Image (cartoon, rainbow, N blue to C red):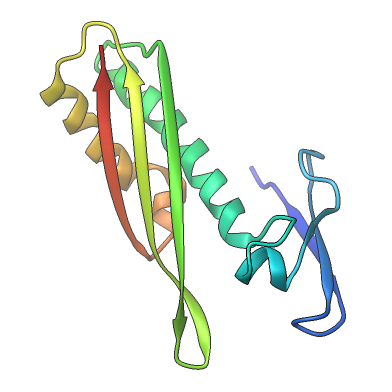
Length: 141
């Protein structure tokens, strides 16, 4: 399976503007630019989109891991914080921190933690990212 997304950019790095679109139409010409990436301006940015992809991938993969252990989550809520830092003349994504809260009937903390940590390494987005990936996983009752 292959999925695609595209970006369009016009202008210079600071005064230019861009849009990001996805094949499915979930994003259709979503605006992005220097201000949305580096100055908390309106619009999206690549790091935010990587975070959304990672949070979504992790949540689905955790559901799979729990299912393989005979468990089904009532809810899984994951947040990904992507860190972009100055690196020499450019920038690098240096870390992703996942925070996950899950409600899983019948799960004990040790089993949940084992599956959550294994999922951190196994989810496809984790595999593609070379940044340090950390995780807080909390089982809610």
